[in-house]
Image (tube, rainbow, N blue to C red; front, side, top):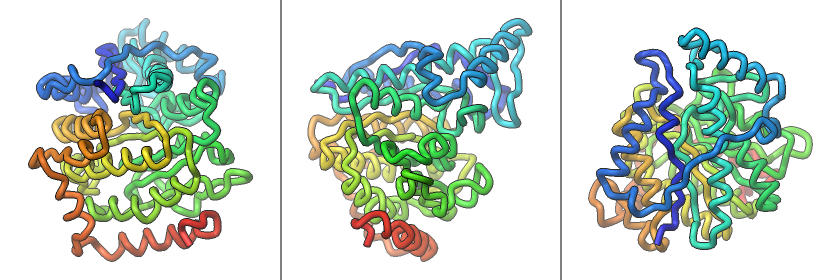
Length: 369
């Protein structure tokens, strides 16, 4: 029985970028090939996306910005050329429709959770979304897919508390900005720091107004690795999420913190992603919550496909015990989790940073005292 709904479509390859651009259709080709070669494609429930409407996008994005992207898309279609929006972000003739489809894929993923046997959804879409701001594109992103889905879940599922975990190697600045004043959506980002976006993602960016304390950044030094990420999970993610008691957990699942990714230096192994995914599944069970994961970054196609597949396997496991044995290296045990947590060679800077973040937010969360 499938526990995971997978939202995918070959039309996500229609968003084109310049040759050698890291965010290319090859990323989804690699994931599709892995799904088929492992047989996982037959084990999950596959769902087709639908485009998000302008009204659905407007809960996050300004109407003028949506119109601007539409006009740029028309320009690209007329010229049959790519249009540069900023130094990193491009639109091709099909990009506007593809971006609406990517945002709409998240809405389909939300709807899928209404089915009792479906515990999780995974959105395999591009362009990614977590850098997109209300009024402008950024960092390969056009619409903020996870933010649009969070608002939709609040409206359609009646979720009063949504917990967003962003484990992409880059700070999810667009998602942070969307919910910075809003305690009904908690945003927690684990990312390399200092990195990109510049001057973004320090732990003093802790929310404002009623949302103060509901925005936690965990700015981790380069080279943090499996042990550091798992320690941050146990020391910060897990206790705060349990205290917040979310109705739904959303994940910006970037895999560019992988040890073989060309854009970053965080050194998470595929086994490390298996461990993080297992902890995500356990946390959701403790919160009596369901999960939606959204593909964000990951630019080594082999590492991306292997790590994303590990997350899907964990989320599709019938029981937590089955989820614990998903290990990409040996296939039968979860010993990697114990080894990672007891490894003593992580840099002191990682532990010190985690302790700083805990202390800073201890005035807001009893679990961190």
